[in-house]
Image 1 (spheres, rainbow, N blue to C red):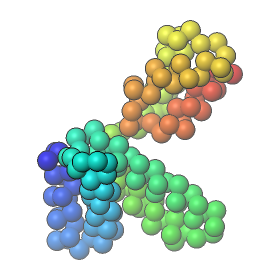
Image 2: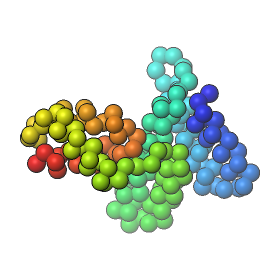
Image 3: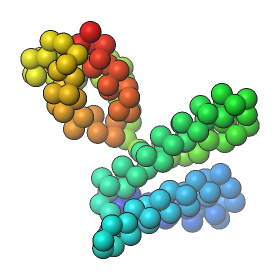
Length: 150
């Protein structure tokens, strides 16, 4: 079993013993998403730590988007719950890149690709994405690339 998945199970047990309802619910949801991913496809398989991180990243992104939607719908109590669940998931994700670090990576990729116009965005994204995997949201990366190429 992947180390991260073991850690999630251990933390779930700890949260249940501490009667921490938010953490318990969030970790159950995350483990369910991981299990669903493991059995999707033609054959069941066990996910690696990198694949588990991708699933957790997807779930955290869902929480951010839901919080924004609840804020737009004037439902602050539900938005706050989504943000709290996102914070629980963030404990298991790698630290996000700062804006300065992201800008430096994008600048290096633009130079490496020899990009000069927005039409070269795909080539730059192909270089940057593996470097920032899991450490920056795709929208943030594409916005920075677009800004740099404009």
